[in-house]
Image (cartoon, rainbow, N blue to C red; front, side, top):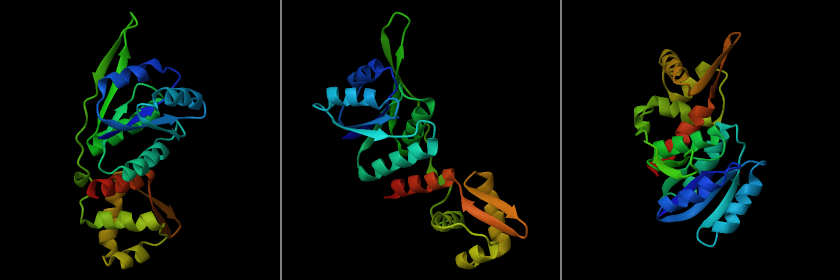
Length: 212
C-alpha cells in the first residue's frame, strides 16, 4: 500500500486527473496553505469515499517546515510506499515532495496540460540518493549532528570533551560539515557558536526513517 502527497493550488483538474494513474493508495495527504485550504476541502469532499484523506496545513514558502511535517507523517506510516502528484501548489511544495520521494525511494509525477486542453501523465525521474554517502552510520560526523540536535554549543572544547576527541580533529570535522551545509559555525570574539542547520536536521531525520 502507499500514501500520496498532493500539493494543492488553485488548479485542481490535474489533481483529479492524477488519480487515474495510481494504484494501491491507502491514504491521501493534501498539502494546503491558508489560501488554498478551500480547494483542498473540496477535493477531500469528493475523494474521501474512495481514499482516507487528510488536509495538512503548511507554510507554502518554507521548504524545511514542509519537509519536517511530511517526515513526521512518513514516520507514522513506515511501511507505506510514497507517491506524489507534484503538479499543483507552489514550487517549494512540489520540491519538498520530490526531494522526499528521491531520498526514500518513492515515485513522483505531474500532469502536463497541452494547448488543446488534453492532459498527459509525466513520470519524474527519481534521483537515487544514498544517505550513507553523505553521513556514514557510525561516523563521528553523525555523532556531532546528534549532539547538535539536542543543543547548541558555544565552546569547541566542551563539544570535543563530550565526544571524547581532540579539538583539532573536531575543528576539521566541523569545517567539513559547514561546507556541506549541515551546521552553522559562527565566530563571536574568542568563542565559536556551533549549531545544526535546518538541512542537517532534515538529513538526520531522513536517516532515522531509513534505518527504522
